[in-house]
Length: 215
Image (cartoon, rainbow, N blue to C red):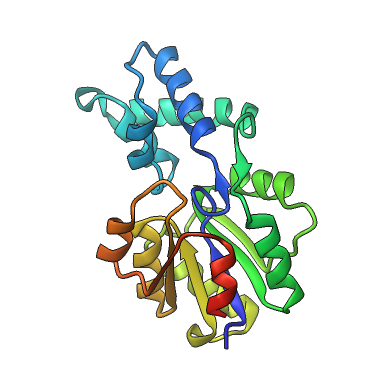
């Protein structure tokens, strides 16, 4: 029996790619660096803001000091424009409401920085009760390290057999496998079905409503 569903945020609950790309492009322009296409950004996101910025900067300029400078500029700009284009995927609000009505606990485990993660959840899902809303936090490794899933399971008082991890990327599938929970990949996000399969998805769904059928 499933008692807890842990969701990724970007590319799973929310379509954030427009704001991530626009913010990164703005910061690239601020530093007189080349911008990137939306498809390129789709492959850069998913491992935290530091890795996004690092990938966007031309390789010869990737010193730790410059990457950190650009990261700070990105965070400032992104927080000021965080929901200009971002929207929940079709069917997500209904899915969360149905899970809650069935008494199934819900949580978020994202590699986005904590402040941004919390702000988006408050903005788009203000009435949904989450067991935990976790983004990147000091001292806690990013996904695919399974510690975030294990921490959430401990908070919820559930076993791995009672938990599902839902995400759109190979990172999420690796996280689920490492945590010993069922890995559910979604195809409406930033990556492709092949990546989900290659990284150990137990099930792949094409619509949010299909998740209810698995529970």
